[in-house]
Every structure is written in C-alpha cells, then in structure tokens.
Image (cartoon, one colour):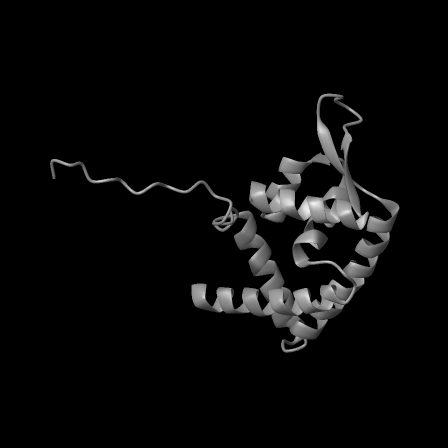
Length: 151
C-alpha cells in the first residue's frame, strides 16, 4: 500500500507541478496561497496545513513575496503577531491555479468510474483525518539511541 500511495503521490505531484509551472507557481506556492487565502493565519499555521517544514515555508513565502503574490502583515486581531496575506495579484494567480489543479485531478480520475472515484476520495479523506493525519516530513522525528561507550 505504501508503494502504491507513494507512486500515486509522486506522479500526481509531477503532473500538478508541470501544470502550475505554466502559470508561474509551484505546488508549494499554490498550497501556501490557498491556505493563506482561506482565512488570516500566521506563517506557522499555514506551514502545518500545507505540510511544509519551517525552512521550506520561509523559502516559499520569500518567493511569493518577491513575485508580489503574498506579504507578511501584522495580524488584525493581535498586533504582536504576523500573518500571511494574499495580494490581489496572488488572488488572481490562485484562482487560475484552482482551475489548473481541478483540470489535472479530473484528468487523473478519468481512469476510474464515478463510483470508484468517489470511493477513492472518500477513503483518502478518512485516512488523512485519522491514522495518516500527520505527514511524516512534518512529524517530530525520534532520535536514534546512541550506544553507550561501555557496550
């Protein structure tokens, strides 16, 4: 099952990446814009929702700021906190990206009949809300125990 999910994930990510590249953003940038547009959120919350580690989030947000798609602002509810805001240009590219992503997903799911399509999406939603809810690349890593010198 792990191999199949990995294969599907990598293939879908490649297709999404190629399609989004045509409008000038990456999959990561799309995810950050999407989560920032949903509601006012701090950078750390968006990183968690997008499945990005801290370093990748900073690099991604820096690129979005350079492109004029997002900016860090003071929170409207807590002047001490900084949030990620999507600019008008960012909203425009995000709405184009929604269309592109939808087309890719529709094309991929054409391999399945309607019943299987619905079952697949439903099963993945259940798993990612339950036992597969924490992406491994953002989960705390257990350190290997270092053998003592006396062993």
